[in-house]
Length: 119
Length: 200
Ligand SMILES: Nc1nc2c(ncn2[C@@H]2O[C@H](COP(=O)(O)OP(=O)(O)OP(=O)(O)O)[C@@H](O)[C@H]2O)c(=O)[nH]1
Ligand SMILES: [Mg+2]
Image 1: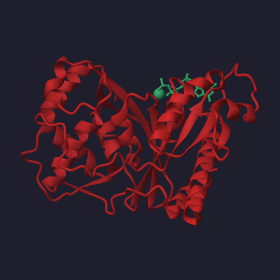
Image 2 (image 1 turned 120 degrees about the horizontal axis):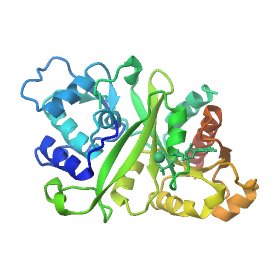
Image 3 (image 1 turned 180 degrees about the horizontal axis):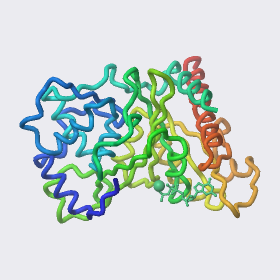
């Protein structure tokens, strides 16, 4: 998981895998946005990093942060790839987009109950 | 690394609909990684953001090769709370200069747990300042290290200059029950605050 390559090498690699872009095509992606791979689109034409991402995501849902962690990619780079795969229809996010409002008492109560149940 | 994780529980349950996040923050070596690892149901993961020395997220990768950059590690773990809801914990270093990273981290977060060490209380000020700047509510948990004097909580509260309503608890980041209790204190506080906000 922890790369021994130096940051400079990773930057060069990041530059390559994103075709030189640092900004995702959409900015709705949060670290905890949940991603689901659609399984009816072929992976032909995807670069190796996107293919790896699709292979990771096909068995089940993961968050943006987990995808970045499993693929050893910086979050920013993972977001660029994910946004492209959303544009091409390979990835969908689970609706509603999980931007729980911090003041949402119902969510907080559910979190509290879930934590208490673990004691 | 091996990209295809072996175990099935790497993935979320198909029924999960909502994900929320809490931040576990604090100064160097205060126990953030330990805390996340103690509570996570998955092997904790690490990812990083590449930052310039000036503290901006790298946003022009092409021009970056000659500039001085640094990487900031995020440790995170996951707790499935019920069939629909999953909680992610992100352990984040507290340096003020990583402004863009803080914007990303605090965006959508429910709140933060500040881990503190009674031997180095003053080192917690920076991270508490950052949270206040971003308007993210927090509780403080004193991680118990050997050799730390048995301070009274009210002394610590005063030393940290906490608001009267800010929860202050003791915890052992290596212990699951103790760490869960610290999170519970935080979430009870967050819930109370919403009540106050609604009635305000
Ligand atoms: N005695 C004791 N030791 C702890 C506790 N929590 C963490 N430690 C130890 O303190 C050291 C630092 O803990 P980490 O979890 O790596 O701290 P961190 O905040 O992630 O550190 P950085 O990421 O380097 O800032 C490790 O050796 C832990 O085993 C605790 O509650 N009690
Ligand atoms: Mg750490």
